[in-house]
Length: 107
Image (tube, rainbow, N blue to C red; front, side, top):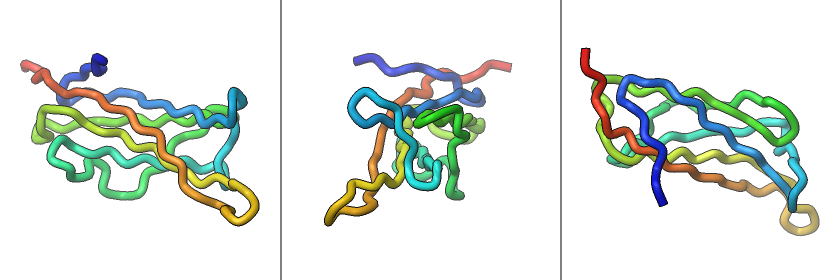
């Protein structure tokens, strides 16, 4: 498996599509949240971030890195609440993506 590469100081778009079977579905409240972890395990985004809804079950968010952010693999963790019904009720579902920041922008 190869990882998508981005340069440090760049901004990129991450997208999630929530589905039930093959049908796109919205999470509870039409809200989908994102946590982005740096290679050292600390959060890149320190405040709760919500993705922007593009359509049923589809959300995106733009991520930026600073010159002081480390090079390496970043974990993007999308999460939202879904109603599983019955005894389960609302429970979280996660969708993760990894990207690598491995190049330094030369100025």
